[in-house]
Length: 203
Length: 155
Ligand SMILES: Nc1nc2c(ncn2[C@@H]2O[C@H](COP(=O)(O)OP(=O)(O)OP(=O)(O)O)[C@@H](O)[C@H]2O)c(=O)[nH]1
Ligand SMILES: [Mg+2]
Image 1 (tube, rainbow over the protein chains, first blue to last red):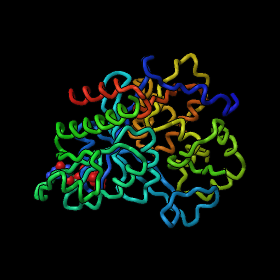
Image 2: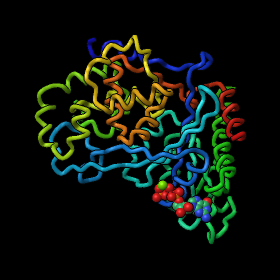
Image 3: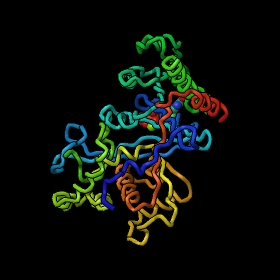
Image 4: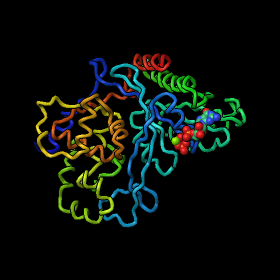
C-alpha cells in the first residue's frame, strides 16, 4: 500500500455518543520533590513513562537532520496513571518532568489537557512559579494543591494565593498527596473548575 | 525537512502538520538516513528498531492517549512478514485489551518515540486499529465532566 495515502482517513476519531472513547487528561505539575509521583500513585497504578530526547549542548531539543556531534540523548521520565471511570471513559494522569528545560515535553502533555494540578510545597513555594506561569499562559485550568508535609508551616490558602499572585478564580486547596481521598478531592476540584469554565462559555 | 532520523523522543512536531505529513516516512528511507546509521553505533538498538525513520509525523497521530487495538486477524495482511520482537510484543498486549500509546510505552519500557514508530509500522501492515479519543477538553458537553466527577468520588 502506498504510504501516506488516506492515512488520516483510516484513523478513527472517537466521537461522543457512539460508544467510542473519551480521554480526560489531567497534568500534575510542581517543583522538585513536591509530591507529583506520590499523588499519581495514590489514585492509580503508577507507571514510569520514558521519552528519549536529543538535546543540544544548550539543552534544547534538536531539530535538524544533520550530525549528532555535541548532541546528547537524555531520558525524560514522566509519571503516568490511568483511572477508568467506565468503559469508554478514562482519566489519564501525567506527572510532568520537574526540570524547566523539558518544557517541550510539557507541550505534548498539554495537548488536549482538561486541566492541571500544581502541587505546592510551602517550604519552597517559589518552585511552583514556572508551572503556574505555564498553565496561565496556555489557558489550561489549574488548581493549586498545597501539599501538607510534616513540619511544614501551615499556611492559610489565602496566603498561598497572595504569594503565588493567583487570580480569585484559581482554587487553592490543601492536600496530602499520600491519601487517596485527599487526591480524589483535588482531582474533583480540577474537573469542577473545567466544568465551571465550560458552563460559562457555552451558556 | 525537520524530520529527525533517529526515532528518539517523539515529542516534537506538535505544530500543525499537513495531513500528508506521514509521507515523510518515505523521505526518510532515502540514502542520507542510512548514511547516518553507522555514526549512531552506540545507539544502535533503538535506531535499528526504527530504521532511521522520522518521528514527528507519527507523534501527531499517536498521541499519548490514542487507543490501540488489535485488528481482526483476517484483515491483517502482514503477519507472515518478519516482525521485530517489539512489534510482536505490542500485538500481544493489544490483543488482550485496547491500550493507549502511553500505556504501551510504559508496559514495554520503551521510549515513546520508538513505540510510535513501531505503531506506525503495525498500522501500515493493518495489524492494529487506531482510535484518537475525543479529548474531554474539546467537548462542549458538560455531562461527561459530571460523570467524571461522580466516578472520581466513587473510587
Ligand atoms: N508528609 C508528606 N510527605 C509527602 C507528601 N507527598 C509526598 N511526600 C513525600 O515527599 C517525597 C517526595 O515525593 P515525590 O512524590 O517523589 O515527589 P515528586 O514531585 O514526584 O518528586 P520529583 O519527581 O523528584 O520532582 C517522598 O518521600 C514522599 O513520600 C505529603 O503529602 N505529606
Ligand atoms: Mg517524581
